[in-house]
Image: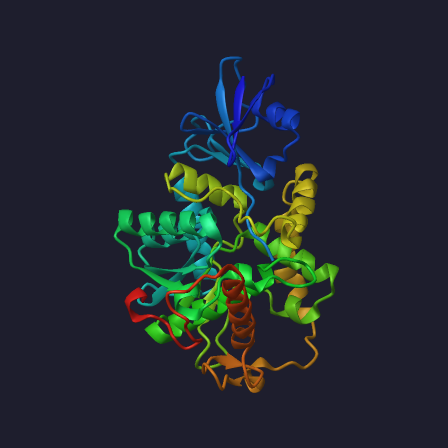
Length: 64
Length: 328
């Protein structure tokens, strides 16, 4: 499946069965990211299909 | 996973409470959490005017949206920090949000009104301006709120922000800061406006989910000057722990606020007794000249030397006192 990682919109081809597996495959922490398909945010147990187009949104911000 | 409320397919998982909500039920759950905290901490009432500190990010715009939906009188304040394209884009997001919902957005322009920008405030040791940027924001949020008669300033600090700040204060044993950390900072001087953090028990992931579901157009990218900031390192550590132990951040922060804070002795520092007015700007301070005025002097000096080096001229060389009325 094709995954676009925000904010730089870096595109990766990843094989994963579920959203949780996808984040693991990308080496990303669940609490620091949201996975979006179309207009829908997906929970970690959602099963993915090979043709899916997904976006990964980072949620961490701030400095000091 | 099923929605905890309607049993339909869920969209947002709340691992710390082993629940999940669908996109339809989630915003109501989120706003109810905020309302419960406002009530419990007695943050403000519906007859009070609130100034929301707006950055163009998910937390501040999500907070402004939530307060407005809950029926509070909330206006925004955006500070033009002068961090190149990042500031321009975050300003556009803030202005677009206020226009879309017909809300009042006040603005302060550091460069035009004060003669420097945040990149002029790099710390010589860390090479970062984050601490100085925090001082700039706290100063102007308080000053504008006091000048315009707002009774409370609300910031979008979330669970991750607060847990990371607390983690840093524990790492460095900043006992005074630990003793003062909390969701409400009471006014201890007539010139100090009350500060509240209505999102302090909601995680960054939850505020981002709220913004996405409510179609709030926010700036997703990180501040280019924050890369390598200590707070981001602390958030990384806490999120790694959260991966293995859902609820770790919540227990760390809320446990401290409930059980630990009251036991901390702050070494006799009495802010109310020690505060006086800055001889330059009149804002409350414990020194003769406040930290902001001293820092602004350094910023202007740096800006002037940069201008001389690159042959630039600024539109206005402002002073600390010179807020432009047209932008307020």
